[in-house]
Image 1 (cartoon, one colour):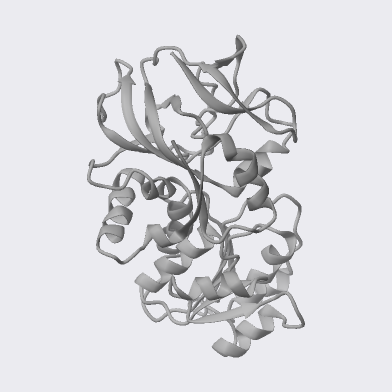
Image 2 (cartoon, helix red, strand yellow):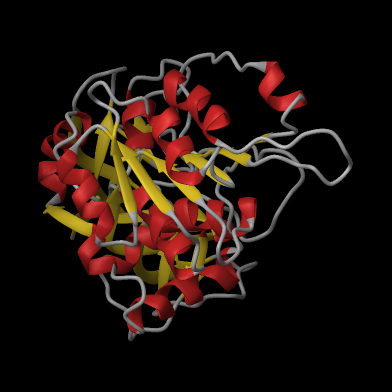
Amino acid sequence: MKTEAAIQTEVGGPLRIEELDLPDPGPDQVTVKLYSSGVCHSQLHQMHNPALGRPLLLGHEGTGVVTAIGKGVTHVKAGDMCLITWVPRTEARGRTVWQPTGARYHDKLAQGHVYTWSRDLLTSKELVVPIPHDHPKDTSCIVGCAVLTGAGAVMHTAGVRPGESVAVFGVGGVGLSAIKAASILEAYPVIAVDLSDEKLEFARQFGATHTINASGNVDPVEAIRDLTGGGVDYAFDAIGKQRTCEQILAATRGGGQGAGNIGGMSVLVGIPQEKITLDPSLIIHGQRIFRGSLGAAYPDRDFPMYLRWHKEGRFDLDKLITRRYRLEEINEACDHLHHGQILGRAIIEY
């Protein structure tokens, strides 16, 4: 079949909306017609990554309807509404090595195992999660990345409990999802750290109890220590910059000698693009924990829960989405995201 997709043909170049050829699904593949897709900052990194082949297909969170399945697919059928994600439904040890789906651009194999910046996509059954038709076709798409990444880091990676203190560095779509999950879990305080007063005020709508603007003379680490009497139980970096990667370790509370005298946990969520330097004395003397969180979700179980939270009014996905674009406006959407002009999350509607 033929469809339209955003295709990048050169590193750092603009996206072209052009025709893409999709073969029939293989035994473990699913074809989906998209209703909507999120616009994630990870795609901006991919667009400038020379290690990825071209032509390159992008996007990894979407909502759509199944149009065809391979003979080995049993969990969805044609006509089912579904979410598209980048986190496999079945966990495997280590990182999964994905192959191109078979999509072709000008008879050349297109790179990208999942691509929601397209009107239709062909992908692995592992990245397709069925949902009931009574969920929204637009706002539900961000569950496939922004929500699972931020909320999953809080719920699964850290295991935040009521009354424990949380700081989140960076309050884009992922950071706001982390803040909302911490609020739902009754953490306190929930501290949002960013460089924009507008974004920090927006974070209060998702459960931030305190905000810190780190753009001026305020040291966010010292401010967090002052607010919490020594540091938070959990600090999350939803940005991945060198400075924030290093700050979250210092922002967590210290422990000390003894088997049970464990310090706080620092969780790196944003994908880093540069090397970082950590002070080992903070880790050993304070028994602090520094760990990563890469798509901390059980899609088949968690996605229905997040959508239920939305229906119950506990997690307002409509509020989290602040900009909407057409596929033809994808370059504009990427430019707005790059320049920090999007509160929350942006989506594409088909």
